[in-house]
Length: 486
Image (cartoon, rainbow, N blue to C red):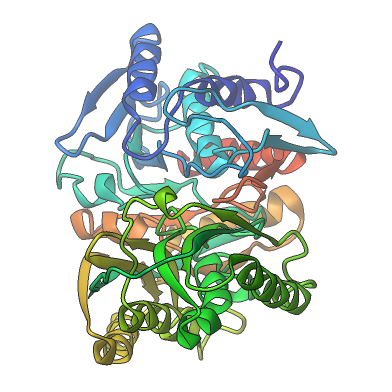
């Protein structure tokens, strides 16, 4: 029996359990799409895949409501694959193992995929409900949102006929989102020479246990960045010439704050003396981060230089330039929004560092509510890294979503919130990449809003969704569909 089988609302949790049973990380949504197509067939609903691979399922209006405004229900199908360091989970092959803990649903040592699986499950539950009074519905289930927003970018104009869009990808109940940040991938490449050197041994360093989290929602929390912390640990030994850098790799996904990084050092003197010096610096680092990152772990152990893909270390100059680039590259909040208290306007996440045979890549995701500020930050990254020999490539830009305070949909949803819960909704702009801004490029006439249940720690193995908030989210969604059909 599923851990979710006793939860309410039963239809939503039923479909969420099915979604969790089918692996669906970014770029691996095919099996889930096939399952949802079979669902549509079983319920007599028409469906199609567009050229971008998005799944669209249509349901006719309830009798007598054929003239009501058409509604597009939108969520993304993919999930972020992050797991605890000790977990053997294979996101391409293994189902998510759900647990219920103190009023929350979470996963076992992995991301849960409530972002955005709860939204998808709610849409499917709506489509399966024969009692709900609504206008015509179109379910827009997009692909590869987390790793590039490819589905939203590829949506064809004219394929959808609705005029109102409900995006179900927000993560705090009681809030209605009317705007979001845009973003761009900024990848710095450094050409680095390797130089044969006599080595007396090698040291493997692994830094792990950081909180990580969503690079938009959590970027202002001051969490540790594994790439920067490991570079800080290594720099004294490399600058002094006591060690040589054989390998460095950190982070995993562009939109996740990096939780883990690894490096391999070649030693020139006594390996045990080097290990002792590194351990002293590691102890200091752990003390400095004890409050913000209490689970930070730094493992330092002797190994063989043959553990590296390359037996030839970087030259001293190349290693120094790489670490200088990691430590000087902008990371975190760049500017707060001057018009919205407490909202980040512009930020960057130093997401991934990969050292190859002759070059290294430093991958950043830059987010901003303003394109001019986004471009300013990209220019700052380029200016900072150019003296170290880095070139910067920009790719995958996507627009933000500009708020419309006069939105009739916003007015209706706020009024419904007051009626249903006795309080006004909080009207918000989010420093994360909702698909609404991209979708508006193809459908500029859409009136759009985003809402969802309470999800904590998305994009990390600590992700969880509050059960009680899911019930209220479900009730609010159903009430909204009926209200908008009048």
